[in-house]
Length: 279
Image 1 (tube, rainbow, N blue to C red):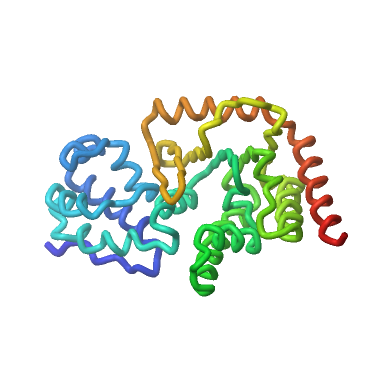
Image 2: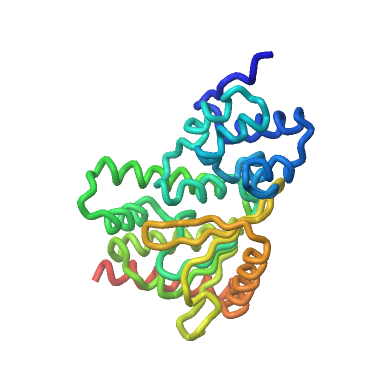
């Protein structure tokens, strides 16, 4: 009997791969846990592959083919499913982000990607690589802009951002760029598209002194937490870890300014940047 057809890379290949995985697993009569034990991952991870929130790693693909009798389908299509326009260290997180129903994020040093304007994103990416070709920077900025299209939907995903005051005060790209960036955030908040709170410097020590934090929830997959460092990133699905870091985020919310006071501070900073630009 012929196996499933190869994926069309032009049409959400990871979602299609996940659907094929679920179909093949159910056809074999295997639970997610049973299949996971054969390929040395958890049943939770199999569920995340099926939901399209995690990447199929190249070394796992042939093991899935052997376990499911799919005649090399997953090995052939692994590369197409993993093709991404994002940096390798962030690709899996960005693609999970696109599937999330709720995103909670704490940003200590810069405005997070989903809230960035193109000018701010350009300044950040140029700082990351001062010698990059302008065409490369253009590609990175376009990738960032693609991510922000999540906000075109009026209500989904729920986006809750806690921004450190230090990120708002770090002049990135010049004062005009900062004024535009903060006005953009204020506009999203005033339209009730995002929940934004500012963690003021006066809060002192807080629950996320070690760095950035992003938590994502999904309709058909367990929640994930994303850890980010300089040039590195890692997704984690361990339930105890996710629960512990969700508590950390709740503590940050408790230490942050109210939404109303946060909006007032963001708009005041935007006005200051705009005023000083014209002095």
